[in-house]
Image (cartoon, rainbow, N blue to C red; front, side, top):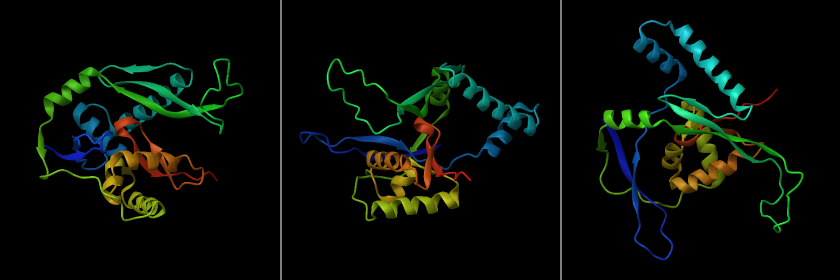
Length: 212
């Protein structure tokens, strides 16, 4: 049984009635070690070391193909593709139809994850839901400054290994949209203590690795 709650969305333009949407209450993040142990248990054949090696090989192979401009489809799981962003401070608006926006630099922003329809169908058949609390989780102004919110997130990551968007919202009393924009802007800073990991609904935030 998976628990969920109702989250108030930002107020609509024009004074329309406020809307809500269901949000899953995430238990915690499963580690690679736990995933390997689960795969080994379900297969009953492969040793944990082999499963772990295959996962690392899969990650390396995905980098090989994605770096060459391919998309990768894994039947029953997902389709992966690369998302790009500008790697310079130049404006993104065209000055006119003849503007060719020369001398631009781009970088890999993230990896897009499009779930396979069979995976979604399997989840729909297996999952049941229970509302974890009454009422609606309403948007409220955070009692902490932005610097304090980031500091609280860093401490949370040190204790738990990572932080999800929902956990960041709950930790700092922020709406999902505000938290998402704040974390995105923070991770773009080269001196930020946190960085993103994963993509889409699987995205989490971890401590940034410092290059020696």
